[in-house]
Picture 1 (cartoon, helix red, strand yellow):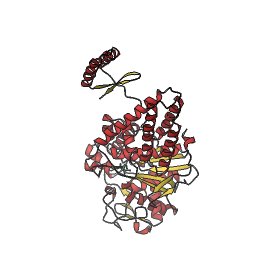
Picture 2 (cartoon, protein in one colour):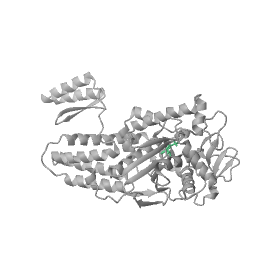
Picture 3 (tube, protein in one colour):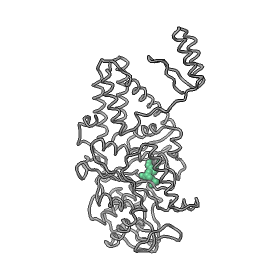
Picture 4 (spheres, rainbow, N blue to C red):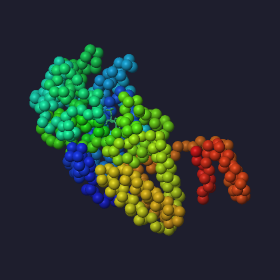
Amino acid sequence: MMQNMIQYPNMLKVHNTLSGKKEEFQPRQDKKVNLFVCGPTVYDYSHLGHARTYIIFDVIVKYLKQKGYDVFYLQNITDIDDKIINRAKERKTTPEKLARDFEKEYLKDMKGLKVDSVSKYARATEHIKEIISQVERLLKKGFAYQIEDGIYYDIAKFKEYGKLSKRTALQAEDAVSRIDESKGKRNRGDFCLWKLSKEGEPSWPSPWGKGRPGWHIEDTAITEKYFGSQYDIHGGARDLIFPHHEAEIAQMKAISGKTPLVKYWLHSGFLTVKGQKMAKSLGNFITIRDFLKENSTRVLRLLVAKNHYRSPLDYNDNLVLQTERELERVDEFVDKLSRIKSVKAGSQQILKGAEEEFEKAMEDDFNTPRAVAAIFELISAGNSLIDGNKISGSDAKAILAFLKEIDKVFNFIFWKKEKQEIPEEVIKLVKEREKCRKEGLWQKADEIRKEIKELGYWVEDTKDGSKIKKI
Ligand code: AMP
């Protein structure tokens, strides 16, 4: 269905942070797309900010796949880092155990969010050989130097440093905690490639003594192993542009001499609370697991899709309630469509319009809010036609098929209804009310409805009988 729907196979434009512009998307090799997104540092539970970033890239990958691209989605897992070592100390456990436990939780969260498009998760600690090889090459080429506590990258040697972020110094929104301070550094912005270990810290043997990788080098070592020195898309939230992604460019260009490392750099906006980035350090976070205890995954997936991936998304409870109501509209529409038996046609035009609008939106730098608006316009127009009995069974099927296809990307439309345990008492009252209605005892029927409402349920009268909803 979607394959037929695609009428503009070469119109996809993506915003590239490197050029600051929307560019036509043309992978390096025909339809093959190698894509890397920075994964989590596994020292704690993930929060809704992480969820937003990973849902966005899940939607992007699923859309590309639906367009016929052969996508390999690689994601690293930072399972060795200062944060992991410090947290393990606090919890009186080992960094290895802490990292494995939180990796498990992260993967559980992703499964809960239906983020299932990653082709390979690659742990930093399983790529030590590749990391050491990159550090050796950087030293040999004169881009790195050794001091007392480790090997550092000399940013003064790399003239293009700052090309991605258009700066060479830190700003407030950067992932600041990852700047390695050391007295012996040549330049303030030099970053660590290999840290010589302190007593009791996890370490691996290297030509420079026992140590562990710096943060930026794990990504280039992993991508070089699976993709080579150049690939198509690199994604992450915007706090990673500087210095993390800038450092990746500096490392790989120095090693391979090839440019660009990445053809398209895609950076997503933050999930914020009252305008501030959701972050562990600010204490304004909701973990994914806590969110999912109270809410359904589809709410978060729609909430994320309603906002453009590059814009900030300010999270609040009202937004969740509003999104739940929108999902009720979706469910009602799907429900009505599934029951249409009429033979009168009339809806082809609205479906064609929605298909075109949806695709145009997605082709324009993955404009999911416009794509979602197209779905809701289809629902409004479809509802009017249903009310006028102007949709045939086959038209309804065609609309459902379109919704099913786009739901492979969004995952919020078709959802198994959570089993509603309706109390016996309510069922008995509903039956009694139906009997009253049949006998024309309207006032009594209204009284019973009030009783049902007091018990926390709402009855709706439809052509097919009473429907009960929890309030
Ligand atoms: P971390 O585990 O801190 O390295 O973060 C993993 C990913 O989540 C990175 O791409 C971060 O940029 C992203 N991230 C962290 N906080 C937020 C947030 N509040 N909104 C969006 N993305 C975030």
